[in-house]
Image (cartoon, rainbow, N blue to C red; front, side, top):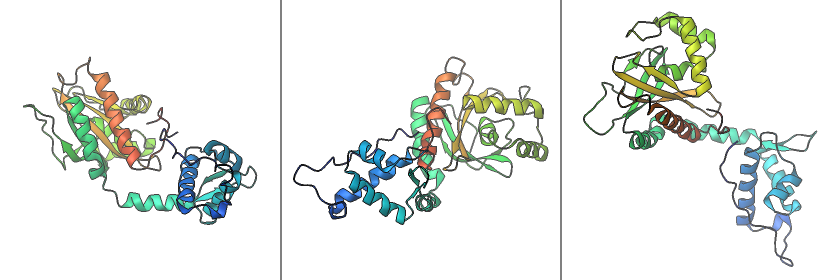
Amino acid sequence: MSSRPVLHVLGRPQKGKSMRANQESPSVAVERALAILEMVAQRRDGLTNSEISRKLEIPKSSASYILRTLERHSYLRRAPESGKYRLGLMVLSLGRDVLAGLDIGEVALPVLRWLVERTQVTAHLAVLDHGEAVYIVKVDAPGFIKMDTWVGRRMFVHSTSVGKSLVAHLPKDEVEAILREHGMKKRTPKTITTQARFISELEKVRAQGYAVDDEENSLGARCLGAPVFDVLGRVEAAVGLSGTISQIDDANLPRLATLVKEAARKISRQLGRVAPASLP
């Protein structure tokens, strides 16, 4: 559930100054309508008129008038059995229009900069393209150590942390099809080269919310990755940290993994993903 605060709504009218719901000032009505939409968005099981009126401390008649207006324009829908209001299709339509205009690279860039500032390790954003992980954004870490990576670089999914993150939530048959098409080349002595072990590795990625490439793609390099989800809960991209084994050592790994997951959540939220903090 989203932790975003609901708009503070102008409380009940002062005694002697009450107005009929359809005579409220435009600014008050708009604020109340926005507050109602935000509150309903946070309750997947919906809310009744009475619950909305009580929680937002507005007259029931005012809430009823606004709810009927939002329902008429398809911003809300009302379940006849329970009388509870949920978000309507118009909200989804508007959201799609907004998301269609988003460039995920532009959205991710400031978050990756934030990540590099806190980790001092090079960060990437990758997407899945024809069964391969492709870097589309890179932010270098300060200092003399530079990773041999670049925007446009294509990599196997089985040997990279971003690759694992990108396919971890795909159906098993799709993952197996990718592995059959691209093979499981042994990049280093630590590379996973069997489907069974890789499928088991993806279960671990889903459970902990991040992936690790422990010198599996390049000796001396260790990488962490976490999935970025879109508004429908599908993996849109993956955030990755790439460094030397001294930069991402055993003692530092848990802290860096937490930051990678937080960066991925930040980008997911900007893509419209709303989920409890316990979920990816």
